[in-house]
Image (cartoon, rainbow, N blue to C red; front, side):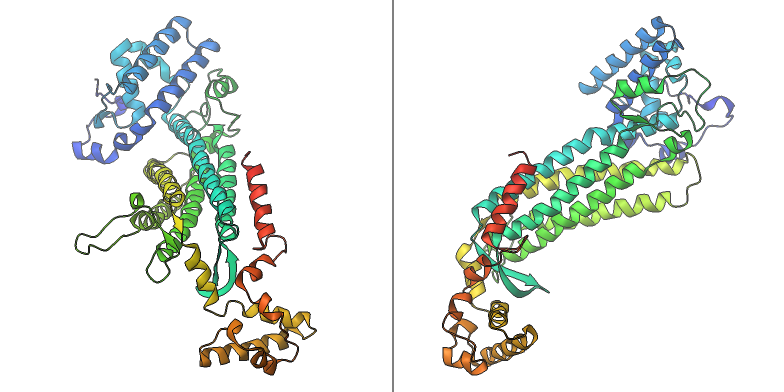
Length: 460
């Protein structure tokens, strides 16, 4: 393959090999080889459509590009650092294949709008995959929630027992987070679906190109209306990294809880052997390594977001070589995000809740204290006063090693004569959960409503 610099006409000296290696991006941007060929095919067809190139040249270039694509899919293309990036490598390979006519492909095009187009196409092709994986995980959450509507567990604030809740309600909280994640990625598609090609280096071109034709060929809904913005915009990549960071944060929070729930102290969940590992020295260990890895990888994705924000913050218009740094972090985020969603889904789908242990944890604490305060409020006692009465009963329970439901009626009535025998019904954890009928609450009917709405959203 030719390695003569395609832009080297005005240069008298050659760069040292290590300088070439430092400036080259082929080690990572070869991931966009398919997109580069796809963009070139659309561009040359447009050149033929507008009669900028004769159809004989167009047909020859199209045949050559299709041959390169076949070789790419067969693993037969080899790229070189000397040709710097995927764009120059493809052009050099095309030149070797069809001769000097390959040089006409770059008519009315710059690497600036070419790389921006490839990058848009790369994300445009992968955003639907991310959305599909999120949807799959949402479906798993809904299915598990439906099986656990009446499974009782402690709800926490400050990692302290707060009030009993439905495990199904807990799972549906993460469904809602993922719903917002999906909406963000769907909006991200709107800004990714804008074609830069035709902006050339920064100012457009004197050739009578048809950008709408190219957009239609590539399946873009819009074209950039400003050539400066077209070659320098990386908002769509920043949005992707930001959305990915928020999604990974949600997965990481869930993984943190899973890591706690499977511990000896909690024993709320049992993970499948397929998603855990053992210890090289401690035979009894069953470690939630997949949850920990996903939790750890969230920091990796955050780093890529901060990296690109830092790269972009001082860039003057329009294209600058700094923008070569936009891809590795994005590629790595895709490579991190998709497996994380897939592994998390499998891990969650095969996890078994310890129903008895969860419920027991709500009966050996004071998480029903709010029930007693609400009970007193329904008897006409101002809630603040009721709060104080129950607080003293809790203190007494701590001192005497009694839960509220274990105290005698006489002991309870000593705190307030308004308390009657029916209080013991209200202090049951399952009753405390079931009675919370407010919209969005943990009451069983409300959880069923959440699940019903989720199924409609998922088209189930």
